[in-house]
Image 1: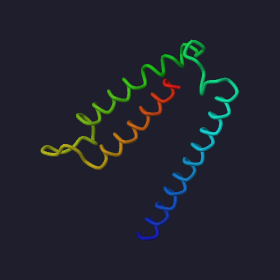
Image 2: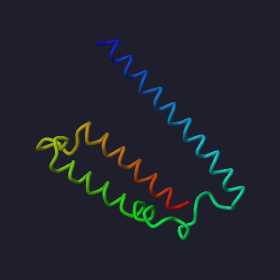
Image 3: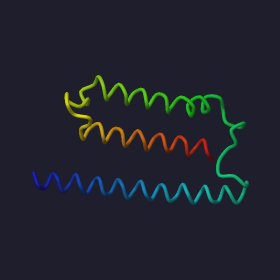
Image 4: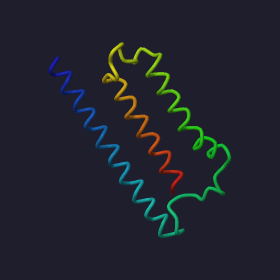
Length: 107
């Protein structure tokens, strides 16, 4: 039991380290793109229509899915509870996804 917890913890730490490394590479590439073109990412007018649609609808889909999870799924809190660990984790991941989506729109 303890060994399994240690292995899972090590895997999670390695995954987080990998993600932080990838974020560093993305920021480095964004900096190079900014130096080369004067902006971090593609202008809105040059985005393909499908990508524009995805950027616009993703927040609505994630918010709607979270509301459904909170009210009707197996992750819904018990009566008398406002939250549980699962719904907090799912909400955190959705919030990170929304922040990333808005970051793409902003740049």
